[in-house]
Image 1 (cartoon, rainbow, N blue to C red):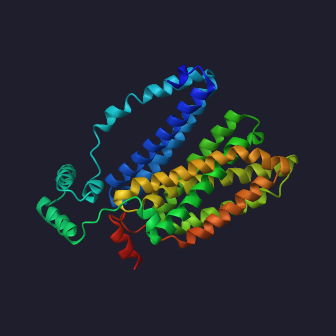
Image 2: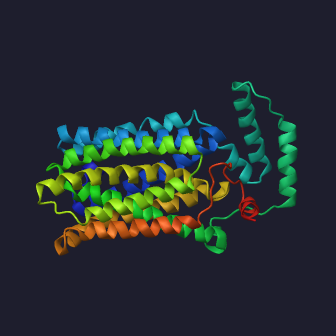
Length: 349
């Protein structure tokens, strides 16, 4: 419908709806995949999600380079979404989410799904013991976690607003560099392609770090601090000087890789902060903050007019604050995702 809209206002409204829908689908798909994965497979799921995103970016850039008609461009990629609803039929509902609803019929569906998974993996699974255990938990506490807990529970509220700022920072800095640093290569297409390539490399680095050290918190903080340093150094360089420009380009590449590494960690780290019933809302609201941060990159041009190094000073300060705030977050790498708010409070104690 976007390609047939005759007015700019109509195009803008429909494109806004498309953008919101894409982010919602991506968020739900990520959380859904994460909840279906075993504890030792969460990092692989996160890596595959990041890699597919980077490959999609490179595919979109390549296609846009050869097809300059925006109508044809959007129609081709819209056609791909005719296939995805069919593929979703093959994927079962998340057993974690079903159990978190604390309803008998949902519990039965979860048991059915878990039985099929155990049979396909040739594992032992006792549905009777599982059902009795879950019913006992429900008898102890019938409270269902609500998305309002993010505001009403001090523990979740602190974590949520810390992650909100981290999401805003990483999206704002990454998209600002990607969209406004055309002067580094002289070509917007080449600049975006390099962003996708270096982003791919950063996500691989994030996967290797998570797989090696089984931690989320400390790589998350360190990457923010490294980015703060690189952006601070960039603010002192003159892009008009040939020698300094080469150093600036190298630092920008390192910054993009660090930010991409943060992105590969922040999706998983955010998901592990919330109980199952509100995990989609928690990750979705954090991702929304990231989109707001990304929208702010349009105003970077005004800072450049004041002083060429001012944007990097802002980037450095935001990353430094984000890294310091992240020190208050818990370590989640060695624990399974929490199933309830009560479990989060027990872990904190």
